[in-house]
Image 1: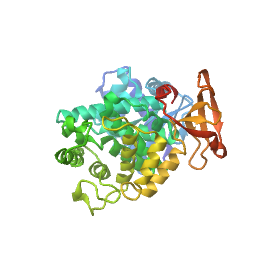
Image 2 (image 1 turned 30 degrees about the vertical axis):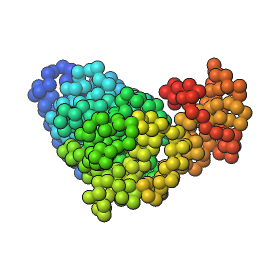
Image 3 (image 1 turned 90 degrees about the horizontal axis):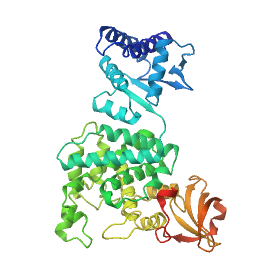
Length: 436
């Protein structure tokens, strides 16, 4: 790495950041500085496609070089990143002076939350500057995903082609959250919002699919494709009569034929979206095809499909089983796992399913259990795929009385026989949202 070129790039970029506070955007001084930035980047991009600029304990760095001696321009760049609540930014090969100018223009407006800035940059087609966002609370990630899913559904309902940018950003955050806290987002899928089933089912399937992919050892880029496919998998249902979708009884043959059209309808929508990988289209088109390829649409039979299709199908089935619908009561995550094993080798990929169930653990997070002493507890953590140790939050004592001060209990794998059965959390009035 050419350290001098790197230092000159950052110094000039910082100078441009400082100048945006003194001059209007488009001023010749700013334009000149940004053009010099681009020139300094050219030799750097011969070695790497991406440069990372960020803060470490408040000190500015770029790649491996730390700017230990600051100056007004570098201090301005540091303040800019701090004000945006960013860890830093990535500058990618192909960046233009116009993109740098757009970034500083938005940053100068102030009042941004980092994810709002990220979405707006994507909407303005600034694709070579990526804000590096501090790790988020899983609930915030989940909430943003619901908002993105709702917007996508609204676009489809209005016959607009949805934007893929916000979806890609939020799926990336979901993947990173799952990699850093393996069960947090998966647990949130158990907190059902039945009034917003369409949006939440899409987000749940994305989250669970990412968990399936992680259990199967997928790299991060494939997890992002899998999560995006999960988020978009059911868009075609928006083209089906809502009365058929929510019908409580058995569908007529004609109604079932209408339902069977939704994967193809969804794929036709997704194919029009920008920068959507073919594997995502496969997931949308093939998530009801089954492992034995005897499902629908039948025109896919015999065609090679991405393994991600079978992973998404597991996620779709798991969320459907654990969700209350007009035509079916939900089951617990543990019960869903038992039922899904009965479909392994026919409807569901047996190897992927076993890895996912091992990932969830013998008593998945969110399962309410009764202990041998009579206490009722909620599973709030599973150690790992290698060790099935549980962390429980004990909510009721041995007499069935609700504890004013619940306590945690660590249960090693060797002592899981202290659990004598499951408890329906709704029957004992356990608010999953409060405890997960």
